[in-house]
Amino acid sequence: MGLGKYVPARGIYTEPARLQRLNWIRSITGLGLHSMEHTRLDAGRLTGNIEGFVGSVEIPVGLAGPLLFRGENVQGEIYAPMATTEGALVSSVTRGSLAVSMAGGVSTCAISQRMTRAPVFAFSRMSAASLFASTVTQYLGDLRAVIRQVSKHAELISIEPVLLGRTVHLKFTYTTGDAAGQNMTTICTWHACQWILEQPHLIDGRELDSFIIEGNTSGDKKASSQRMTEGRGIRVTAECVLPEGIIKRVLNTTPDELVMGYHHIASGAVHGGALGSNANTANIVAAIFAATGQDIACVHESSVGQFILERASAGVYASITLPGLALGTVGGGTHLPAQHELLEMMGCTGKGSAARLAEIIAGFALALDLSTVSAAVSGHFASSHERLGRNRPARY
Image 1 (cartoon, helix red, strand yellow):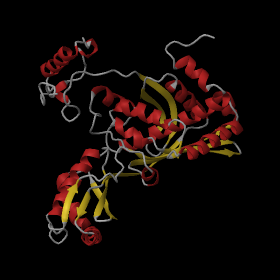
Image 2 (cartoon, rainbow, N blue to C red; image 1 turned 180 degrees about the horizontal axis):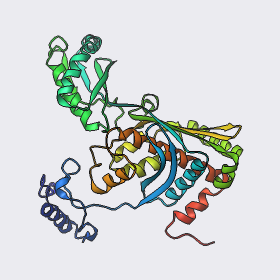
Image 3 (cartoon, one colour; image 1 turned 90 degrees about the horizontal axis):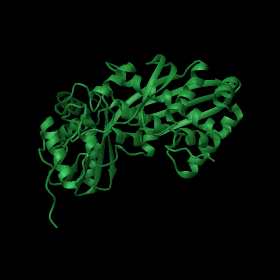
Image 4 (tube, rainbow, N blue to C red; image 1 turned 45 degrees about the vertical axis):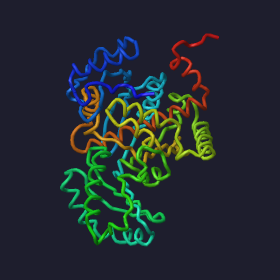
């Protein structure tokens, strides 16, 4: 059986080329694909974002909040855009935001940033691999000089060799400014490795069997224990204290019931082998990532987190730590019109805005987890989804 025809007008970013591709797939499938006919996106501005462009899909965007922040990079009331098709999400996070705001707000802190890339060098013998692993770290300064010629924004923090038999996985760790840095660190690491391969005192060409740019130890777009312990992106934490009266009035439960519910989901996470423990973090990460032009595949690693509730004399202490939010406020899809406007709405453009966005996500993630656990322990979780999350609510 032969291969089908290639999608036409490859590499051409114009509106006529888009319509040519759209009409071509219509002829192949026999479908009208009428929803693809019109798009507000400018095909000429999508280089670096998509290939074979034929149209766009709309995701409903709701406003959650306000949530009062008392963070290092964000203060005051914030409304967050949530791009989602899951009914009850916006209402739930808004309820949690109300409770937190009434209690004095959420304190947030973006702790650190790191982006990694981990090429692998395979040698013919373990002795050659071992020699390379013990020697390459001495050239950190030279590698930094190479990388500075490639990027003004990436800064190489460290290189860490991991010896596995006759192979060496060499983890490069960077800071990347306000960019997520996935592509930036790939390109920088590639040029750094080309420099390494040209150094005969580092690598004997007769001993090297192969080299690839990523050996799958960086954790790129994968949830892993490494994401919890080291993070890959921005590490951020958020906390608040909820008095008993607010818990009863807004969250419809009690401090003891709320903490009891938390202990159940925490022990369940351990038994189920989850990385960290949280109730609903992926919903916030996915909704804000989609609304602001982030790499959606990074939701997988970015939603790993640790939610904590403790009984306090005044009510309940709550915190959440997200160790690896792989996000940026420049690059990727952040330049697209709607996504850029929503970043502007939250004050997340300009220098230092990536840390601000990370704190906003952490604050709303904490608000949602508080609301979700409260709904579960009060018996309202199913009924709220029945009312808000079904297209045709059943009437019993």
